[in-house]
Length: 265
Image (spheres, rainbow, N blue to C red):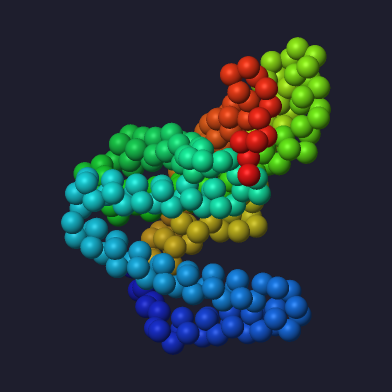
């Protein structure tokens, strides 16, 4: 027998919100400097998720490729902006936004389409019930990996600029001179997903699996979907991180292989 879904009432959400207010009050009393940010983030979460819920209901009722592609494009552009906003030393001009966006497009979109067409195989393949959540999970995790990797790369190049320029002066090509910084950056971008896979099922129950179980899905079926999603997320994050680090590293050097830190703000 399928378990009955327990519906949450507005009062339940209000009580959870009250706990956030208590936490913000404690943070303010402790002079942690995060109380305002905590309240704003909580308010944004509520408003954004409510709006997304309304958009998805409309999208499910009008399941055309055009609207699904439009929704996916908006998600990609917002993720690209978030990558840029998280950089300590961001690239100037369009590169600050375009680099992370291009890397996520090449990785997350490709992996999502492959999964929908060849693995999950809904009918039609762009059915928003599957396409939008899958793309959202891929973009969210790839966004974090790309942001961490690019931030580590640009900050590492800035901190080690003397070493890199010395290696360039000794005749090493740009990709060799910055190789160690690139490796550290790629490792930083991929470690969170590696840790998540290593701890899945032992330290924590991943979000999609938990959601399906709460919705009444058989645990083993929820596990199969979660395994698929985590593998896809790791692949998307890995490819996105590799692409972003390569593009960012190349942007740090001009056509004469000179280190151009003036391209960072």
